[in-house]
Amino acid sequence: ESRPGRDDVIRGTDDDAFISKLSAVNLGYLDDPFVKHFVKRPSRRPPIINRGSYLRTTMLDNLMANFLKNDSRLDQGSSTGGAASSSSTTTVPLIKKQIVSLGCGSDTRYFKLKANGLSAHKYFEIDFAESTAKKAITIKKNKKLLDIIADPDHKLGLGGTEFYSKDYSLLSGDLREFVDSIVPKLKAQGFDTSLPTLFLSECVLIYIQPRDSDDIVDWVGTNMDAALFVVYEQINPSDPFGAMMLRNLKARQIELPGIHAYPSLKSQEERFMSRGWISAKAVDMNTLHDSISEAEMKRISALEIFDEVEEWQLLAQHYCIAWAYNVKKDLGSPPRHD
Ligand code: SAM
Image (cartoon, rainbow, N blue to C red; front, side, top):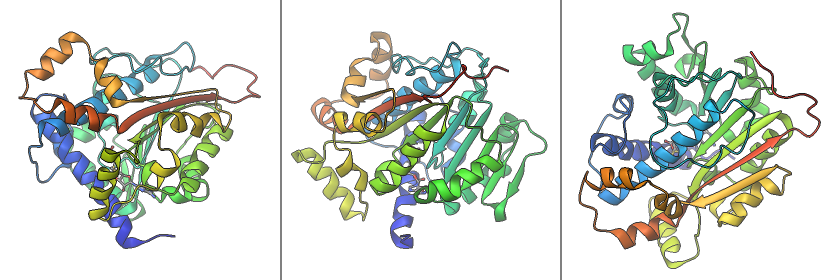
């Protein structure tokens, strides 16, 4: 059931995440010249939040870059590959690949990856119409963004709530109706279930009821020839810190139905393994923080004073990245080549 008031609150979580991302960009944690185009009221965030934005963004960037670069065959994304930036080469995949970003909000990865020479054959983004309308008009009015899209035939659609171009489509819809309404929209824009596809949910599935997020995972597992699913979200709701986190969110009317269904690393993996996916791995952000190379740690440590080490570790134990892959059992031949 759609509840406008509550959905507005959920949509607002993107503004918050994006102000934090710009804060991390402005301080030098992240290199992304596109974020500023999507933030109206920049504000500096505390060190602990900047480090969190840095880590989550860098780790997911690396997973996505590895997916696009890896041409031998679809695999697990071969771990997140450390924190050092890995997107500076100009690799264009030999195998056509797709990316589907669920609840994309203001995410700039399409622009960032493509500017770094890493293009997907098709990159789809989905969010509520209220959110995509703002994003679509921002893109339509911005020459720098249109230059990256590089398609003179790009156009707005559905009353300005959607944006279509050769390799990038921004689509509006409700993820709670994924199978019935999102999938047909994807297909109308050239989405191909036979191509290796990365599905990204960065702080998204956690906001919807498990039965609805499970429908998405089921559909992807059953219908895609080869899929990598990447999830970033909160875990560990029951310890004192986790309970406090939930209380703070509740005070802002934000609920996380997904956290009760997938509260641990193990259950994040089970979300996929119990549905017959070939492999799944979930790692908390504290562990990923420990994987940052010495040189990179030195670089980010010099950006601002960071005293809250214990608080950071606690916070980071409450977020994870999970990634899972699946290849259709009855697939007779390897993924199609160009
Ligand atoms: N993925 C982006 C990122 O990490 O920067 C945005 C994350 S934001 C915390 C959550 C996003 O999910 C919002 O943009 C919200 O509108 C979207 N979202 C939540 N529930 C949704 C639903 N049922 N249908 C479509 N979008 C949804």
